[in-house]
Length: 538
Ligand code: ADP
Ligand code: ZN
Image (cartoon, rainbow, N blue to C red; front, top):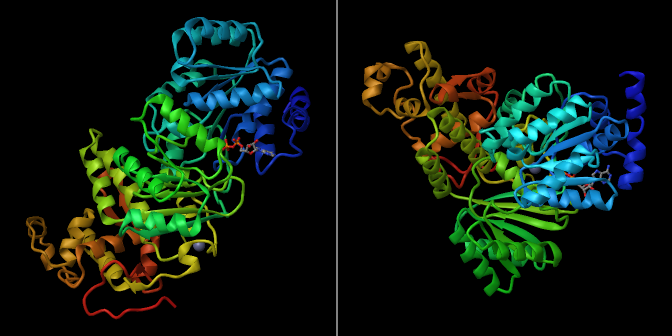
């Protein structure tokens, strides 16, 4: 960094203290802030509650003080913008927002103030930022050297693989193309490897430094429970473990939200419904009560939660299985932001999986997209079916290695398991043999047909009934083999090629299973093959 830059960079700690009233930066904040103040691009992955806002707010103030002008913050949610701008005003920072809640005159006024240099941070909806009118104003600022920084919040919205795709985010590529010299910081709390790569590509952040914080939320206890009688299970969970606590209960449908809220109320729980079908003022009222009063349980669809910052949410319950691990992690991340013990409790059942699959199948998306979605759904199902530490699995999904946590259901009370190693080895050797025999890869359905000795048209067409593994796994049901496969995929022991019709491919990790060095354990509740003995996990 030049000497001039060093001067600006060194202002960060005093801005943190004087403007925000915090003693010191947390985690990677200091590094991120320094990098961005000095004009570098950054991609920040930090869990919810990790402190992403300061990562661009401090640089925005520092760069404005250095005469570099205004920061434009792209944000998808009006409520979030209001909160942030309100908080900045309280801290004495000139900030404003531009979104559809403003009248034309109000918006014009904001724009005038921006052009006069009276705004340090301008929050704007993506569709606002990319209008020709606004871009021409940015051009002017840029020509005058008064465009300090772009911050792109909730950056996963740019990716169709993410759980909250917003097409308007796609147009943000223009920022890099039109203002190559203006630094950009993109931030998100959820992005697995696929989504992350997509963000980098879509926003052209190839040169950006990536700051990946640990996604672990050690105070959250993860519990994934088989669905039997959801209402009764939920009631028991709340009455026995969370009486009087604030919590969020997520349901798949509006109808289910209404019914569940009512059931809870009848049992004396202070529950409120929230979904997109309710009037805006009812939604607002319920949300306000949830934020303001103690011990309110919000029963909601996923329409609720983004940008809600309530520190003492003691539990997040999922009555239905979410779409994927990213969504699940984002939603459960709303529990326990204050660092005190909290629970993430989810019910899962086969019907959920069937419903989710059907939604994918029936969606108008392209086949490749559907394959990716199926893969993501399977990863979540594999998590639900896992017999080992949930946290290890979750963090591994986001690319982070860890040790068993001692604070999840599987760690605290190891489940009954059956040994699926034999089935796993037979599956993998079938994958190997079809590849050898035919020179191409096949999908799970075909591999399972061979193993179970089904003479389908395809099996006969390829002569796969001649393979030595044909019929070797007749004792296994298809659901069992599928669940074995999900565990193999989740642990990297076999790969699914989403770009090629979800065909199966052996990996480095396959070897350990084939050689009998790695066990594949499954929850016993999944009906086990006939004649198998029960076995406790050692
Ligand atoms: P995120 O956007 O990552 O979910 P926020 O930026 O909203 O997180 O920050 C979460 C909370 O942590 C906020 O209340 C914020 O004021 C607080 N916070 C962030 N950074 C610090 C810090 N360095 N010291 C103390 N509190 C902080
Ligand atoms: Zn654990």
